[in-house]
Image 1: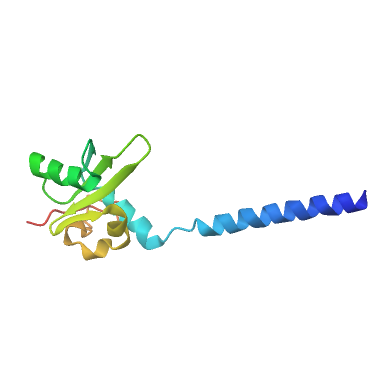
Image 2: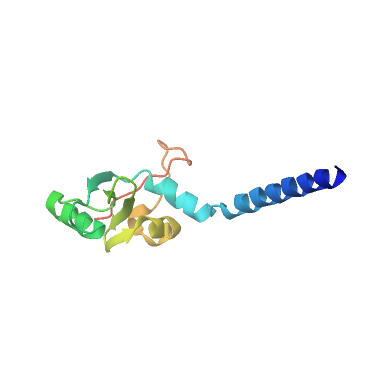
Length: 127
């Protein structure tokens, strides 16, 4: 009976350790979180890829609708997968790349004006 009790304690501690490790892996970078907050203020367009590859569908949609940068395109590949692209002055980029490197994109410069609070970044289209 004592051995059985010790085994149960070992299983519980192993389970707690696995949960702790899993929690550590889900750490999000502050830079990416900031980029995600900035992209929330960019116009978003949703479309389905149809027969085309998602990036091709996004390019065709931009051409057909005459979308000006900056814009975020959500391309639904199937019922489970949606690809995200950022339309910038210099081309089409993956949204995750833009989140991590938002400071490289002039159209995402953050303006601080009296009408907006510092927690509300505003994206500006450069022309």
